[in-house]
Amino acid sequence: MPEIALHTRLRPGKEREYEAVHATIPPALDEALRSAGVRSWRIWRDGRDLFHLVEVDDYRRMRAHLRDHPANVPWQARMAELLEVEDDYSGEDDGLHLVWRLP
Picture 1 (tube, rainbow, N blue to C red):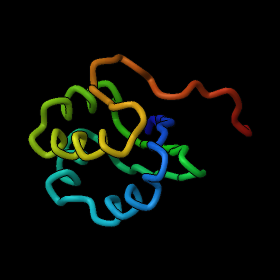
Picture 2: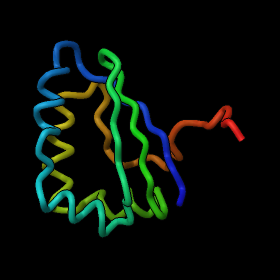
Picture 3: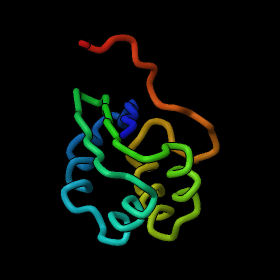
Picture 4: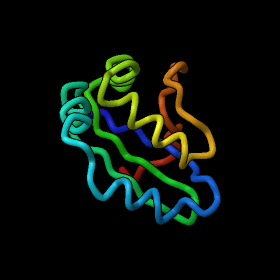
């Protein structure tokens, strides 16, 4: 299963709010992510930096599926209040470039 690593950054002072919002993921968003092929999504925080590891069948297909999904649109609007750079789902990114892996 493909893994995609992502990096996002919080606005100053939004660390606790971000964690509070993620304490409960809306059931409709959970369902939307799973229907888009997401198997696992983990997030680590170091100060304002967030590192995501996503296990997903097809990352670009997932993003296309979620772009206008009624469960994702309000979630992304909420995240836009917390993140330095809003994710508008317009790019064709492939996540972070893997530099090294212990074989």
